[in-house]
Image (cartoon, rainbow, N blue to C red; front, side, top):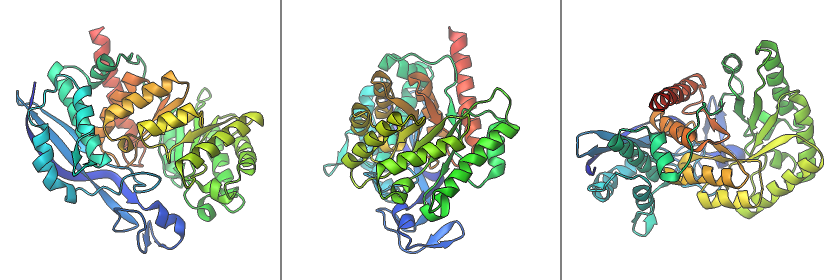
Length: 413
């Protein structure tokens, strides 16, 4: 089955772009949920701005249409990531030379075509990670249509993986100040929560770390107060390097603080993502390795998750080889073609590294469904809820896609 034609359409992402450098610099003036001032990261026109996507549609010989959505992450342009993605500057060449490169390709198999398009260059430069991400989604969808199989089955066949017979646990991504949202994900018995974001030390963490402690204490208390007696989720917080700023990148006092934070989580396990963001990848690996070792030596039961500076498949392999974290957040758009994400999850599993099949609130419903099939086929430890930060909608999309797929596969067995 070959690709007969390619259609592209611009659309909306599930969230926004946020210029992390400008937000952390303090030069932006808060204005409601926005910041007034000049952006600092590449690709941004404002510090906070709506994000757009390109939907790539592959018209197959039999008239079926496969599609994928080109999207990037919220915090684009930092820690080794491509500049913020905006659909408009990419549309002409997508409808021109990239469409020409796709027409006539045989989608009987996914992996070889995904690898080829991931390495496609314009003027000696690879396509933006968002473009490679969307094209590869469309190619996987096309192969599944060709074989009349689920996308999970295509992945399992081509990579030799075993499809899960149970849903993959989900980390609900919530706004930290939305108490009603927290209550809802507790009532829905989400396995990990609330992935709240702490980006500014003074406002979100506290100059003594007191605000973050109060937050974890409240989450643990609320789980105990309204959750079912047999409900024991893991508490997760995303720190965006704020503890590194608070402790001037000194690892030992940071580890001691995490010990106190763990006490606030009570009987619930605690995961912390990106407590530090170093200036280079090597420093990030070294600091994470040291912190992880200190936590073990001190008997502090806190799971450490790497995100920034761990963007690509080679990056993830470096962190895994250094045993620099307990988990890596495999942020799907950052890896470009989804075959890299598939290989990253399988590599982590084979090398003793925990894997979160992540992504970003900035994705779409379709890229989320495709990620769900990757999760079922590769069995990461857990998946991040997406798109958006509404939690309810993302949980619905992911939970229902897994339920449908598992029911289909059960009938085939």
